[in-house]
Length: 203
Image 1 (cartoon, helix red, strand yellow):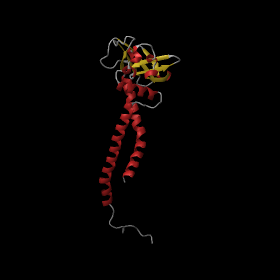
Image 2: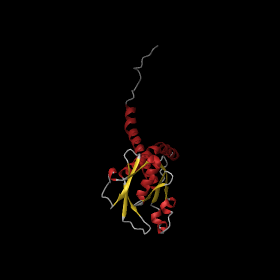
Image 3: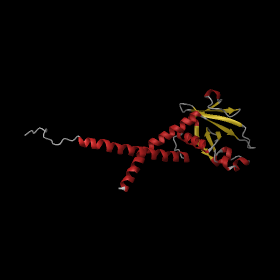
Image 4: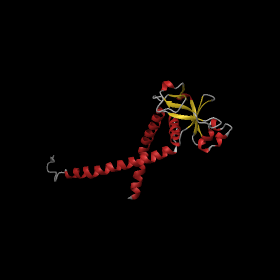
């Protein structure tokens, strides 16, 4: 019986996993549309400069630009000076593969910064270099950018979200089925006729 239940759970997971992944994808893209304030680090590791990046609502353009200070909320698209069409993005790289992590200096020796670094590569040599404010934003942005490029979302955040949402959805569907069986099936059984004398005999 336990083996049968396990197989049913596996079949249900395979069926609903694409739905859950699409839900996570939309959540990531919605966060990119809201945008994020990123810090700028120079060779002296000063963090007094900021810039903001956000995805257009139609998911076709990244708008970005420098800020004098950290914003108190979202920054409007029209106040950001630069833009990059998503169609021009060639790749997204992370960590030590980022151009700004290969530069000489103390920056590449900083493990914390290395784990929050990612870059967008476009055209022949164009690049947008990011240092995420925290690990959560790093996962959101790398997931979202990969989703825009039609690639898998591979972050720990996506794996955790997928496990949590799959577990919740399976429990909900199994509970719904149990309630249906307990309420509907006995009711249907009670409605069976005591005899079938009303059936017309063609003979």
